[in-house]
Amino acid sequence: MATPELLPLFDTIAQCNRCGFCQAGCPVFRVTGEEHSLARGRQAIARSLILGTMDLSREVIGALEDCLLCRGCTAHCFPGIRTDEIVIAMRHAYLQRHGQPAWRKLLFRNILSDSRKLESAGRMALWAKRHGLATAAGKAGLLGARDSRLNVANRVLPRMEARPFLRGEKTQVPVPRKALYRVGYFVSCGLSFQYPEVVGATLRVLARNGCEITVLDNTCCGRPAQAYGDLDAARDIARKNLDRMAGAMDLDAIVSECGSCSTFLKEYGELLKDDPLYAGKAEALARKVQSFSEFLVEAGSVDELGALAGSVTYHDPCHLSNRFGKITAQPRRLLNSVPGLVYKELPEADWCCGAAGSYTFLHHAEAKGVLDRKMANVAKTGAQILATECPACMMHLEYGARSAGLAVRIRHLSQILDEAYQAAEA
Image (cartoon, rainbow, N blue to C red; front, side, top):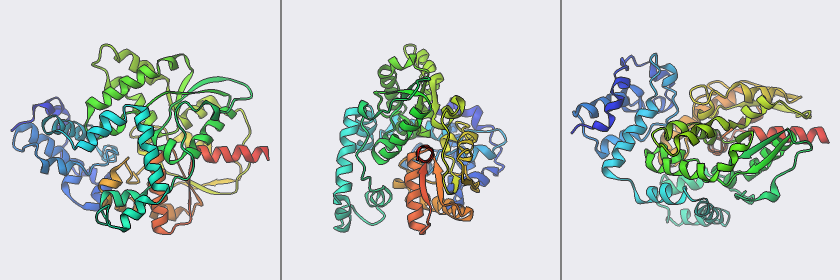
């Protein structure tokens, strides 16, 4: 049976000439060697679904689930086909016909769209992790086999000892010596729970650069729902964020140090382009949003950075790479501005690390293969510090360093700048 929902993509899909150059940039294909893991194979599936020579079955959608959505293929595609958008469209068509697992529907449509429920669920997960319940359950066999999703998540996730940063915590916001900018801080789910120390560093660096900070009352940005094809849930989350951040439109900028969040907020205009009530609001918000390094470079530094010893390299999060946000020169410029810190370029710096949100929990064998390649490149640099701008990347890179026995510290860019400012004070 044909899949008419994909018909608007036919002209785009028809541009694929089956040349196979996408092999050069697909991290998953390098691990599996399977044609369906390749952009060319995914285009062929989409074409067959449109023509009705293939049904949108569970087996077919299963062949699409291992896509990282990293656009590594796009970088090597002469027509520049964005295979990730086609894969998301196929996932969406499948959900429209067959629905999705109950846990995923609950997560996208009930928890991620409500910051209170999100924070309650996050605190419960933190409590279980800190008190060793997840580890004990794994040893007792209650989480299934060693390669089960829950067991993998327990191994990959950091211990998360610090107190989470919750929305509305005004007392933790530093005040600038001289206010030059009024900035709205978009709270990232991954950073607020997994790496609240990064949030603290980000807020201090922004304040040192003359920012009067307003912590926004946002919920999840909506990218997880979009990635799994639940576009209705992603649009609902976007609308709720637009309503809750309406007051931020008077600010100079909306900043997030999570590359996935900042890039997806910039895509709200496209996501809601057919919504007459929210299309204009979404476009206006998108123009306000900047990533952390993007904002700092445009604003210019007002304080001198102190010297830090050691060498550093940088991993480009997919959503900040040249294939998405085109925020690549800014973080390198900031790292090179720290006195005493020796910058070493990472081979294949813009290749996905395999985290891709929750991808590593659901497709761990493929993700681990992608990660092993990344960590081998990190080892080649000999760098003592590996910097990035994404909580999922930080989580996976830390796991990769532990697995490889690699003595490299994983740091967010804001943490390095924060240490340099502290060094200047000392």
